Amino acid sequence: MTPVFHGRNFHPAWDFHGVTWPKIPKRNGDKKTQDTIEDTLLYHITSYEYIRTQAENIGQLELRKEMIRQELACRAELAEPSFERYLRKAYGWICDHGTSIGRPALALLCIWGFTFLAWRGWAAQEAAVTTWDVLYHTGGRMLPFVGGHAYVEEHTLKALRAAPHVLHFLSAMAAILSPFLLFLMALALRLKFRMSV
Image (cartoon, rainbow, N blue to C red; front, side):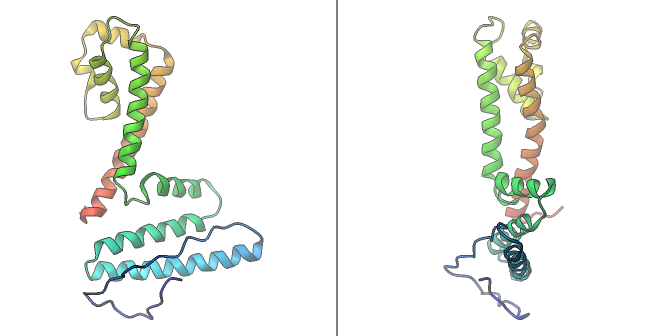
């Protein structure tokens, strides 16, 4: 169970050693079980909110980050089955509720790798398009502030424009998803280094 502190303030040297936080209860089963699980989730949220504020007051950033993760995971499970709930679950899976820098970076790398390999497979049959051209093109679509076409010759650009529609669709999806993943990485960096805006 989550601990109860009865409104006590944490001592500045306070720390949790060897704690295993309870698993997030899943909302499955009959109505009575659902009500019990909802009550448990609300209790967990209250406890995690309290620990989070206390951890912030005494400057324990790692504990604060863990409590944010636990609280958001409980809120995702507590949300009614809807689009919002799926968004909350996706947020937890993609970036561990805003605490992971590596997960969005890995997702970004995988999307870029898949797009690059698809374009490279097509470019192998085109004499006008080299591996570097594909690298500039896919990298420029993934990173909004990098102009990949600035380094591509005009005849190569025409060949890239004549590529199959499925490749352009993959590039468009990568261009749409990459700013979101970069944003999630920035959120995690802000939380990690406690930057304020």
